Image (tube, rainbow, N blue to C red):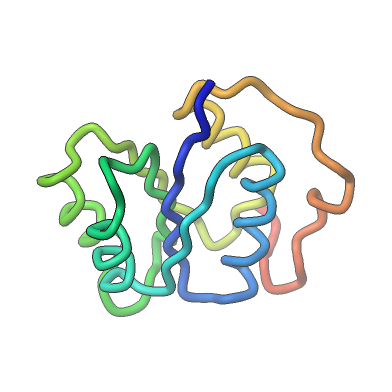
Amino acid sequence: MPNKRVLLVHDDPQARSYIKSVLAEEGFTVLEARSGLQAIVLSAKQRGPLDLLLIQADLSGMSGRQLAEKFAHPFPETPVIFLAPTAKAKSIRASVRAVLGRAPKKVPARASHPPARIKSA
């Protein structure tokens, strides 16, 4: 299966870094944006559509829903997952696998323990 590209949009750098590491361990290429505007600029520089948008639901500035609506016009086939503030690594992995059709992979134990700022679901 070709490498899947995920655009992660989250305004908390610690949470963004943690989620990126979880997805990278699963073999996904993760592009990061800290805001809706940065996500739009970053996606415009990509060749072809992204495979998945992973957006913080309560994103500051432009809301997650507003960002998803902006992506719907140029990329109607790109699925969107909204991240709850309490999302855990296990639920993020399961959601991304379900959407992108990726088989489960063993993940090192260190990836299952989120930093203190990411609360359990």
